[in-house]
Amino acid sequence: MWAQVRWDKSDAGHHQPDTAHYVCEECGALWTDVERWAAISRGRWQAELPGVPIVGFHVSGLMSPWLKLEDIVRKFLVAKGDAYLMQTWSNTVLGEPFEEERESVAAAGLISRCEPYGPESVPDACRILCAGVDTQDDRLEISVVGFGARNETWLITHEILHGDPALPGLWDELDQFLKLLFTRPDGKVMRIMACCVDSGGHHANSVFTFCRAHHRRRIFPTKGVAGSRPIWNARPSRAGYRGPTACTR
Image 1 (cartoon, rainbow, N blue to C red):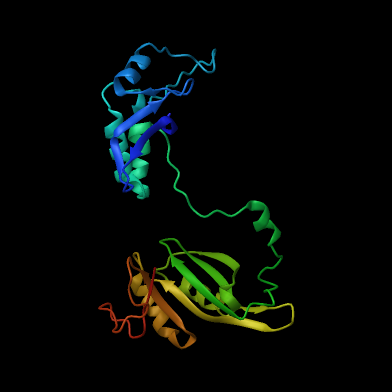
Image 2: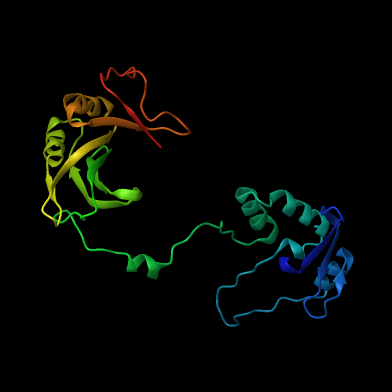
């Protein structure tokens, strides 16, 4: 077990992999590599689930007669702090799966914060509605998102319009959808104030044509890019779209 591998540090706090030993789980004795290999050679496989027809084996590098603890510790110290290297080290040395530490949300706490709402009843705290359109070869997928104070957001609705984006009929359906009105419980009627349409893929010209015709309604073509880039391009792209184009990340 990796938890039983110990090594010293210098007075200055530097790790000393050459001092690595294995601590016996039973008696606490410190094993050198030679003693560890000798103990492993006298061991035997014992089934944890006798009678199961499918047999599986888990072999750690700590059981290998070709790996020294010093080398294992050195690889661990190099990988420590880097999730990608730690995953490789855990998989190839310990033979164990690796799960990266990340922020999690308790299900009970999340459920307790749920509130009933839908397209027919936008939350009172919602101040503005925007939409995003994903362009696929056989459909348009639309998400309408509400925004409130302190970065609070709500997914108001998600709709799919099936059809060929190369044909104008599908874009007419999108045009009508983006004109829909939504109502808050206090009676305020809201409309979609801005929309971004994905121009990546095989239908960029259709997207540009639609956005050019409706740019006064704040309908813009977007394209996903990697890295840190300005959200708004300074100049039109070579595709000939005469209007602002947004980059999404």
